Length: 295
Length: 332
Image (cartoon, rainbow over all chains, first blue to last red; front, side, top):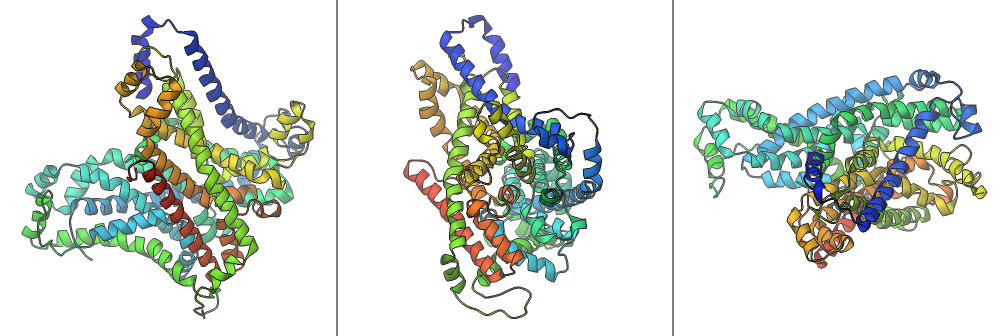
């Protein structure tokens, strides 16, 4: 959107483009600084990709040398011996499960808080605000025992519910302003036409909030996919490991058995799915970020 | 609680909503709606989020070790223990270093990059950004979507004394003293190297945020400033920053909260706390105390200290912003 606008502006004003020397210098310096930063960002990532094809002895001989042969041995090794495959599956289950729960209940809760008045609604609102402000670290120890007492410690459903609960306040806050902004007249029209509360929500209000839902879903997805503390503390059974904690334990093991090639391959395999999603949704994601933090 | 009580008065402005509640009887549709839409999510939230937070305050006053049935109320003894514990105080100090330096470095760097992207273009015609600036945005934002633990793992390799690319580059430039320099293993550099990684991962995120905020400023304001003869630097300092100061405040607080956590980065870069505990932070110490040593009461006390520091930090940022003339609104 913005780039289109900028391009149009450039086209309209090209006839005056007697660029001054000062402009060229400033432009040049700007481009240089930004390019340097981009190189700092990209270089470690490219190096990771390159190293993921090298054997351990090649990695130790020189950080720059190209791999002798480009094969996927390290990837196969990381997938099978380190168990990246099962980590990935667990992550997909947990993240999408939690995303579904938190989006559904978050939207419902935000809708009720935004559009109905009842005693205690402000109290619930402030309770949500508190959940956003306090560090998870304060809750982590009691949370461990809450999950243990209801038998959900070290299980994927327990992790799903915890993820969803901790993503709820942000979801509610964001959607609250969204539902608040929807016109009352439409809900009234639905009620006059005989739609009950359930139908009004699912068939009228929810579809109208779709842009807001998409934004929150994208931000929650990134946040949950990258979650580290909750699984490390609450999900200690290696066969239930999610990707982030699996990579952490892989990295700490690699310190002893030293298969750095596989470690790099594991890192690349963690990044590639997000990279693809990022390339596809890059514009929406950046829009989401600016919306999600300025609402 | 169950919201089936109709409001006694219909306040102005929201009349239509309120009326719908008092006029109709409580049908199955309404009651089931309220239970599923409000009671279920709020109960789940209270069970998994609010209740643990409250419990933490109580546990911090006990000698609970978790797996034994008994726990004794011991008042503030845990807090006394923390403040006389050199290692924990070291961790507090390191957390404070992070919360002082990380937000300022990240916010300044991302503001500079955002300004270059948005107003670095030619000084005539409409105020506009650099050409192809979206490339810079897309590239710098990317680390935000990489899981922080993987960022840490990658940088741990980059910093590696023997096969890391950083020492490879430096020795390639002829700086042979970096032949096998352990960036994360030397007390002098471990903290700085760690901070750089966190900045690396988050600058793009805040840059995108600031770019959006700057684009939200009406172009006429920039044009007026330009006509009045303000240069680029002057415009950035006296126009842009005051107009997006609420966004800067939000970014500052987010970044501060993240700096006080920092657990993921530390777990990947220096799980043991670094040389001579030089990168040990409160969250790490809390985690070890709880899940390795099983001293849950003490760990909860650390959690309370961490929460208080977080709240104090947010309070100070609000106060400073207020005192220097900003509004008190949170851009949520």
